[in-house]
Image: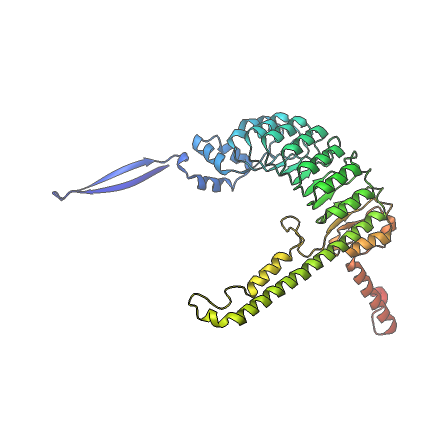
Length: 426
């Protein structure tokens, strides 16, 4: 790139004017870092990796400005590429290496050596990874909060325990299909070290029993998403302890957990009633507190209005007014953390998978559906999954019940009114 600038020089003693033309050579490394990062945000990750080899200036800018990278596009050579460029992305906080079947432990060791600020890592279906990778992440990425290991069948319980002991900020963990890693000891390690855990998927980890689930519920009471799909040894005890201690649960999965009976369903119903009672008590206490604040403000205003009006720096309502009282009410009326899977209305469960749980009765499941208004069996909003349970076909959400009632009303009106359309046309 060439840039030309003109400089005019005037001499007082002569009527001459000299114009000096200065040619400036601008190179690629002269592009400001902020502009370069904005440009790279518009291209794919492959181009970002290639850009690190343009010059030292670009490499330094990318090292400083890029905090998210993906290697999903690199398949066969991913285990050679990641170690060769990991040092160029030292500030990375989020990385995805999904479905890269040739990914091995050497690449993850490079990640642990250079990406100490890493918070999110997706390693889905990386079957060649072993506990060496988990140890590398535990040692080098203590800030890790989200980790997806679903389909990583090469890891085991020991590696997951090591990870839990070092990555104590872990909030999202997916080990679905990791049958050697999902065990009671692993859940106990998570309960002891990762109290902020909110999302856990341990589907098809058949070693898990009520012992591990009980420890998890007692140690991680802030859980919002739990999937025990295919955990065949889980019984009613697990559901009862979860209902008692994990009051913020929004999604539960018990697909093919055939040892779950009506007792577990009624435990969820009772937990919903206790939560509603607690919320109503909080609302009443908040209302009474707000009333006391307002009464105090009115009393103070009426008793000291004359004295305050004589003060030049005071203004009406400057001490405690209705606005402040309303803000107190909003603070006290929260009840749930809305940062993950929001539940501002306090509806509780929004998704429940009990497909394949053949020991359940329609009465118990209907009670759960009635207790949680966000559970639906209608096709438009299907969030109560009951597939494979022929004895649950009569269960219906409020949408289905209202539609059925409306249809019956229309049929009854048609029977009493000859001018009304026949039932078969409804």
